[in-house]
Image (cartoon, rainbow, N blue to C red):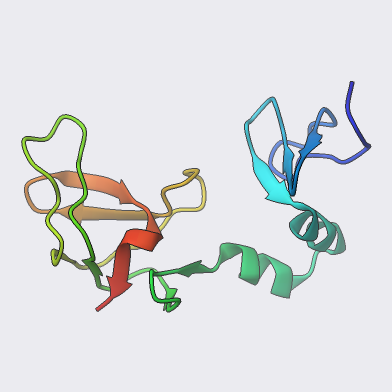
Length: 123
């Protein structure tokens, strides 16, 4: 039984529940804050721009086509070694559909890979 009449902004399911500071949809596993759900209801262009904003480890705004530098060694499942800290990555794309990993890029020796923005800095 749902806690409220809140609908998921991702799949419009009415079966959402509140867990601490987040709203969670059990059907699509989408998570969002109360602030985001209130702004989404208002259909504000500013709210969608803030939700789509991706920032690096130092708080700089990242955009498609930016170059970034990996700030620490990152282990990769199935690879023989980690992505070394200091690796420069060119032409990133911002991914809004991958939960947790919001950067899509191509790294020499690894191919196309998804990264978390908190492990890179803008070059």
